[in-house]
Image (cartoon, rainbow, N blue to C red; front, side):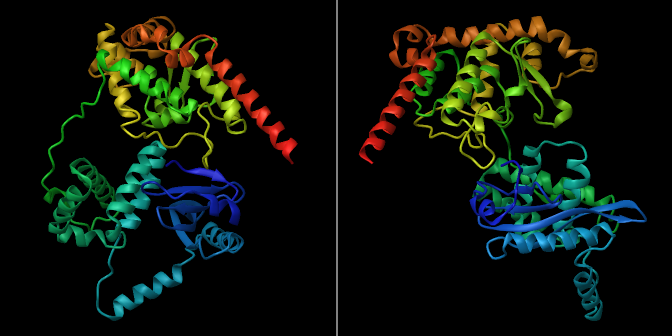
Length: 449
């Protein structure tokens, strides 16, 4: 789940939903650097600030304040102000505690433990990922690996992992059994990257990365795409979905081939109907990879239906989001469906887009441009994408949409449930009927009272 910004008070903190996986942060809108970290079971107040020495930024540090379930927000905010003031003066808020621990280690004759996985992760996150504009989704994925799958190692010095790489291999085997081969491999790639980054500033760490001890799981490309023959049944499944906003979200996912997390965060100002484009400001790879998706006629109608239903069902949230929802952030945050209800969703639809683009006669090169994929080869630097957008890519997008709707066949006109969804004026009629039913019920309740 992506980080959010809200006014932190007892009421809002209590309402924050638990993370479905990993953690996310709710940053305070009034006090910069003050936030609460929300996991599956815990909520923790913390601050983050730049520790400066001689007026220059030395490092970015994160300091926990306390358990949000036990500490009032007012008390946490007061502590946060003290901590942030100390950080601004170049003082670590918990320097005395750290010094005492260091003195105790020297007294017992044990060496200083060196950088821990927690500290190395925080530095990698702030100095590498955030600074280079990595997307919130990418950062969240790494955070989930470190703070959930490798949680027991958070306070373990990296040197201990390097000196005993067998424990890393054992951990990889455990994650493979519990969570699957793909997640096990990706979590180890995260650990490898953090260790390599930590060695840049901690030369005492062994050169050999402890991850080199594992036997990587074999990975195969997932093949969950729909072909033309699968499309009619999928359209029927979408048509009977109860929530019309989710219905349009899934349709737009198929029509655009856009990554679900990027599509969830689309805002009204990102749509330019005059140019017939949808701007994606923060795709995978961060803001520097921002791009425009050319819109076919079917895509424009889907977006219009989503906005109409949004204004009716979620009027407040619809001011800011195309796919509004009653969530903490105001837009859809979960796109998973029961497979018995909807057989394909999420990245299944992205793969389906690529497959159906081929049946529409769209070249691999154009499909890559439409999906914002990198173009391989030395000629990639000579391609100016926006020059192709207005005419060529839009026509290719239209061909893909036409092929998808052609695959649906005559149920577009013969199926009542499909017509009640996609027929001209259907969405307006549904909203009028729903509004009339709501007003009738309100009158009945008022009369009974």
